[in-house]
Length: 274
Image (cartoon, rainbow, N blue to C red; front, top):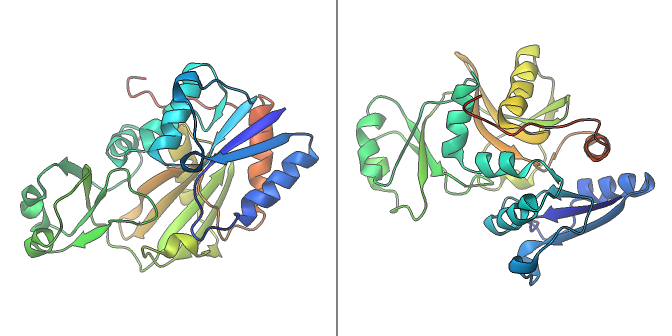
């Protein structure tokens, strides 16, 4: 069986140790593995057809998602499902999915005019970030109307969230099927490239993390949780993250991909009308 991985450019530009090890595990089980980075090859989207038995969407870029969409409408088997990835790519849509699914998450707003948020910030601090942002880029904490005035005019839709006060560090959760692992590290625009410290997770966080997977139709995914005095809040969800800091991540991911490819597990994309 041929598995094709649609991956993202690495920062720094070196192979992911987790992916390298995972590929070797899957090859040892008889799979043929190929990969590409959409931005680094020239393709004909109008003639693109599935050539692999299964595609694994590891990239979050608009180009990779568009190409995955072409494969999806032609019946390609994609992990995570294209519809799930396409929906949760937007934090605006994700905010509704989480609320609909009963997942505790920050109150959210969106607008094309950030000055309209100045009344909100008088009530509580706000997090303002691009609705399709990744790796902490473009995230601003605003505590006063002046902080909002200091922001540059947005060039992409933004999501505005209630800033949930936590206990210092974010809890990053990595999930593969029923396997749930947590790491902690301080947030910064470069923290995505640094492994976190493995930490035990509570039963409450484990159940919440698995619930997010069902709500969003994901099997390989990550989420950021802030542990507050009001309980845990999910502040971000992403498909197929890096799993940095998770011991045995390559084997855990390989097992899930193997099960999915063999039809032992399946995923149902979100449906707000369900």
